[in-house]
Image (cartoon, rainbow, N blue to C red; front, side, top):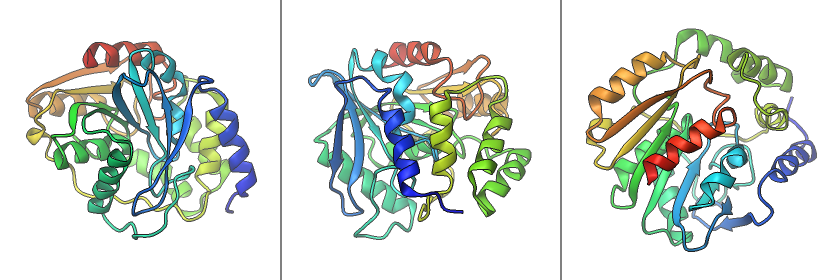
Length: 277
């Protein structure tokens, strides 16, 4: 059953309150609708754009923003076509090419000629595609437990996700999340938002083929969840090492796919800060 908008908005605002007080909420006009971006960090800092996984919203980076925002100007994005406060209006969202055009317009609206780009899960797939689409704009690329980039999903993961996809409900989303994140204990406020997001009507995820990672020309960091149930971390690590020209690959111990980037934030932040320099 679709969730009531007030329930989702309340959960969204509760998680927004976990961000630093000086965080700016910006709505950036694009041909595909207004995009919500959470902005934190020094105005003259090098921009760092963060793309979340599905149902996570840009708010999922709340545990990372304080550390990353000491050095960089963080821009955490609510994805087009997903739950959050990014609107879908105007030009229809039909393909991966539309997502590239949306990101072109978003970075243009933010006046970011160059940026560091980081994505998790579906957001990592989107980030990798964009780095190939506009390499002149992406100075460094970080992929956190990327899906559909170096390898496909595990069959068991897809079978577990199927009930939530066919008949979404808060209970099914909670059950799926509890299975994948077992033992990692992600933030409960975010878990509630994730479960509510799964039932927001009108969501539209656009996919596509795997990006040609061998063609990535900038330095790339791949951080993998050691206990990810979405795919085999060792397989992904091996393929990343073999295909990336300027790649660094590391595993984050005890983490699972959906518990990132919330759990082990210091490990993740330290890796990111070291890589971004």
